[in-house]
Image 1 (cartoon, rainbow, N blue to C red):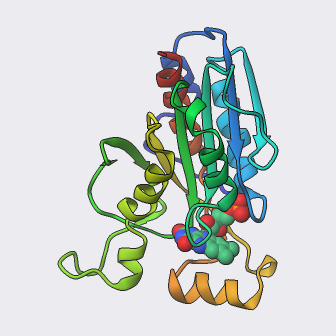
Image 2 (image 1 turned 180 degrees about the horizontal axis):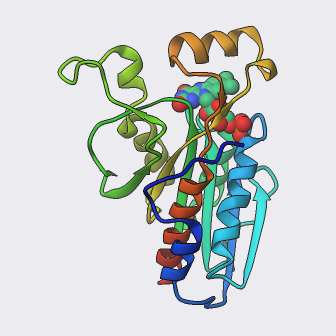
Length: 219
Ligand SMILES: Cc1cc2nc3c(=O)[nH]c(=O)nc-3n(C[C@H](O)[C@H](O)[C@H](O)COP(=O)(O)O)c2cc1C
């Protein structure tokens, strides 16, 4: 697990800026292919605990409905599109998500900088270690176009509609080549041009989760 210093507020500073626990129940649901997004979900849940009295973490395949929770955070990796279990969870529970404040996060290995901080009116937080400036902003390559925030997030927002998340975060994920078959390796190395290894930055994850906890608890 990689921890790096950041100009962003530390988790302790973030917590300090939010009022003390206000009670209520929150649910963090995650999808994963190789396990690393589950650890990101646990870090998000830890931050939510500074605001919500009861925070549960659940796998998207078996997780409970959002009904009865005061806030929901749903996360999953990009696996040639947002992980199918995350998409299925959203589709299954779209109606309940419309009446619960919720936020989304995505783990990924490639993201093109577009200079924008929202997609479809929804604020998007981008892990600064994940985004890469395009070589030529006037003419993006196929890889760069594929990894645009509006491509990744636009699809996810369409799956959620009419429910709308309060915010979406794009986090650097972890790429374990030894866990992949040959086709998967070819895809991540050649099609998206990803760099293998654990690129997660938990300071950034916690900073976003702390801010998001405050926003979701505002009702
Ligand atoms: C088969 C496969 C496809 C992937 N597709 C994408 C992709 O389209 N875009 C991207 O940015 N990252 C992609 N990734 C990288 C994953 O999103 C990243 O490694 C993530 O952290 C994996 O999370 P997990 O360990 O929870 O499965 C892909 C990884 C694999 C194995």
